[in-house]
Length: 597
Image (cartoon, rainbow, N blue to C red; front, side, top):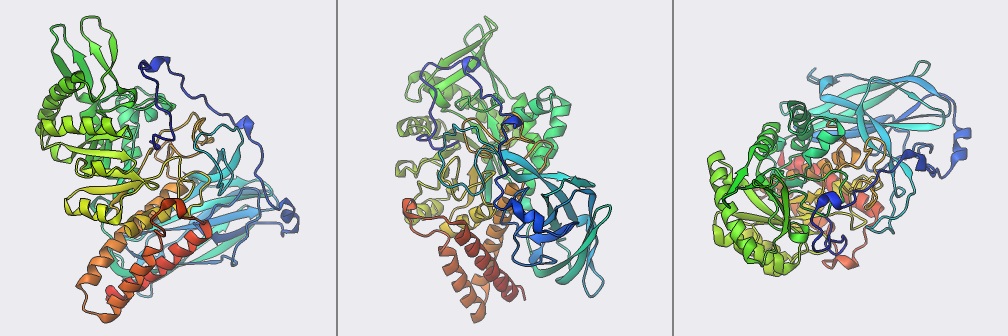
């Protein structure tokens, strides 16, 4: 969640989530304008179908004639074996077009070897509503406006589409290079046709000899918080039914393909401030028996962890949370048959007594499942004294427990937390970060409803998502966290706005396991991080003076991703971010060429 300074916590005593108002949905009738800068440009455009490659680092408005740096007839890209390359094709016309289709062919090299067309995915980009315009800068975390702007984000499989007059339709192309691909140059074409018009675009791919590992083997620690109940609610199925589990398999597979490492689980009902459209429920039911003893039901917890692991998500289980907002806890009273809500401060004896008892049972269960070593108890942005008090109870119970925490940087927590995710605007020094690494601790960072840039909002420039991976590599972090993966508002397929936060702040993927421009660009940055890690290792083992010089220059370029160590003095300009990423990418390609021989 966002920094505690930005989001109000529930008032003491406000513990019954049924009494807390849930945000109400926006509706498309509030739509105002596409905000086209030059609507008259359509009158100057030659009628008929226009198609061209465009940068994936930018968004293109639905009603605006694209302004491209070249004619876009050819797309050239370089990648490793096993890497995914993304391209964007724009289709536009001053008059309406019917049944627009894109057809891809195998990409072939001079020896007749191919990247088969079934490795090339084509998705239409759908426009959704945002509460801020593209590349908005001066906005607050606490959103109070009801404005609406149409922006491209959601990816959707398709066979054909109709294009209304004076509109643009982006199409997202993903090419997954086989790990067994022969290094070298591959060429092919993409056919774009409507009922009356057609166009052909050229594709040129250079495959370098280094192989990117499978996502499950990536070292980048990606932590996107999940809410499985929102999937059940959206599709109107019974939570934890077979229908729900089948939906979750596809939903989680998308996360796994991006290298997702953390499985988000809950031992507290509604751990945060009840401002999601669908509350997170507990996965571990607490039952207080008539004789005062306690029992714990792990059936939902076990099911979800197993589902996630089968989908390919692995590395860590996070259990939220010993410190819920408002210190509110719920348990089922066997005598009355009712749920009871109580407040247990981490500094209280009641907290210590219950959590000592619960941790006894939880540890036994996790050992039996073989999951203890990968489990973290998760604490999220609370007053420092409460975090320290809870951490001490956990550590005093057993040295085997690991704790993860998301919030501002506090030196006092340096040795208490096994996994620490800090908000980008409140970070450790390089010395403190290195000290944690030496001790075997992991450290990541996160963005939320702030800062404005870099971020993953609907209205963010796509390059910002890729920049996040580069920043991780430059600063020395081991990954990235974001709330949330899927905390959808009321109508996410069309309206990404939330009543409290900037559009897209609370989700990165869409119902049905559908990706987004934002998610794909975040994944690109993670792949860059993995490539940087591998190149550093290869360079350290190389005896080539040329390779070492190239690596030295590359590290200098990387330092530019951080800038002033005082975050308040940094200026994140999209143009500069794009130039920095593109230069780093070119240098990485040169390094790969030198080290891949």
